[in-house]
Length: 220
Image 1 (spheres, rainbow, N blue to C red):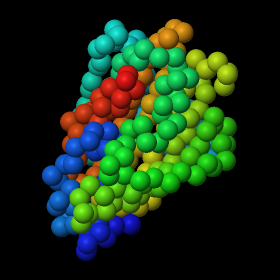
Image 2 (image 1 turned 60 degrees about the vertical axis):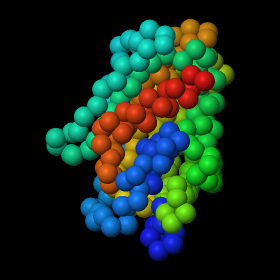
Image 3 (image 1 turned 180 degrees about the horizontal axis):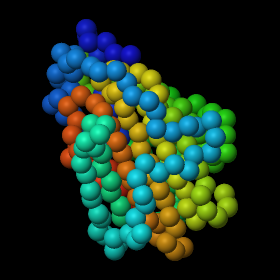
Image 4 (image 1 turned 45 degrees about the vertical axis):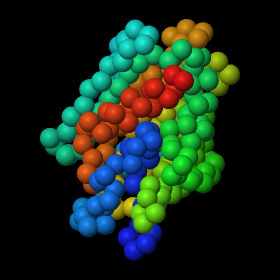
């Protein structure tokens, strides 16, 4: 839902991984919109779907890999980033369970609701409200699921996180992504992020920058 007369509403890990307010937000209310696309994931059961193949190996500590593009068949902009975080896998997962870890608290408020897990470790609905400038307010909802792929809940070795927009502002027609966490040792975790989007004034560089921002935040 969006209002452009005094209060109007942009995307989560899209622009909010950084603290910047993109100029394109100022033109949102004058743009036309296409219909929304089908969701990426079926959260009625445990999700094991990766939107892109996981890397065979991760870059050395302190470095990262980055790839991006636009799918010629679907027109979706996408990016993928991988790197290593010097924390145990459960601590990295706990950071991502906090929905404000990758959002700007100065412009963003959220409401979270726990949903039936349906085989996941956790499943959550997140209502997001962003007010980057006084006359624009963007609102939408996402669902997140954290699924155990290997190990036990007490000693996980691999966790797959999936998220997708489920309703809200028409400026985001399609938005979903994965974060794969793989334990590389007692105090190191490989992180693979992939995201795809169809939204106003977004391009693959924006998506990649957001994913790199998330990786940087997890390393802090």
